[in-house]
Amino acid sequence: MSVGELYIVATPIGNLQDVTLRALDVLKEVDCIAAEDTRHSRKLLNHFGIDKPMLSVHEHNEKQRAGEVIKKLSCGQSLALISDAGTPLISDPGYQLVKAVTSAGYVVRPIPGVCAAIAGLSVSGLATDRFHFEGFLPQKSGNRLEHLRLLSQEVSTLVFYEAPHRIEAFCSQLISCFGEEREAVFARELTKSFETINYGNLSEQMAWLKSDANQQRGEFVVMIEGYKQPESGEGLDVSAIQLMDLLLQDLPPNRASQIAAKFFGKKKKVFYDYALTKKS
Ligand code: SAM
Image (cartoon, rainbow, N blue to C red; front, side, top):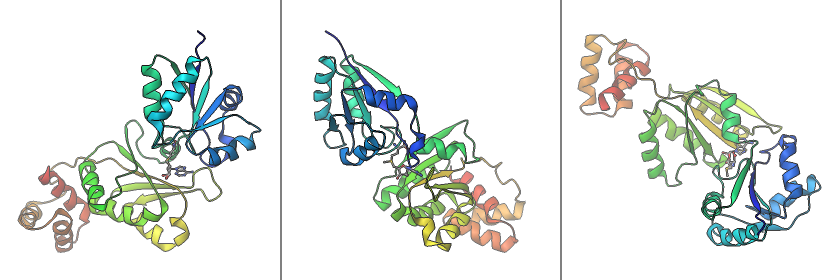
């Protein structure tokens, strides 16, 4: 029995010239293209003069479609999986399909290309030796804050995806969990006409978002500098530490740091970092 292969093909996230030559070859050669949204992907395929049978594979039918894909592979057909943009499976459907196909013993080949998270990281100026990809946070506000709090002392650079209608609320949630001073990079509309990469701490990011409604449009990769462990009380003298310890008995870290910073006429960050070491 001849055996087909499944190709996981990355497509552009904006600029169509970012498609790879190999991706085009594979898409032209396979028997069928599985896509998250076939109508959306047809536009891309038409642009490159590719006309193939298509199969819709999205988060609600992935398991069921896996059976059909495996059947086609067993008949010797080759298939490609694409998503609406970027690399399939990265905050996109495909996980159940790849798992089922590999478990059934068929070959799955990557055709690598663009991924918004990697494109964002590459220009972030933040540490890239280690990063923690979070993608989209859960949608419920309480769950989001809980999730962010768990990440507040993660030392790797954090990478999030966020939708434009939630970006301002997201920024304020980031501030409440990481503090205003944490460095961040907001990468908007990467590879598109209005590509903007905004550098600065979280309070500067918030000011930027509020300064111009246009900056809240489009797609975002949000990257946050990893937590830097301060020496306990580094930069604080004994009286500052005493006041902080007293305030922290009754107040949350953010409020305690605000009061102490005002009292001593120093930057809030050093107090806030101290508060976080006390909490951990
Ligand atoms: N699979 C895609 C990838 O490889 O990046 C991600 C798909 S996910 C459903 C879509 C999210 O990716 C958007 O909400 C946004 O956070 C991010 N994204 C996609 N394209 C982008 C772009 N051109 N600029 C910035 N972020 C983008």
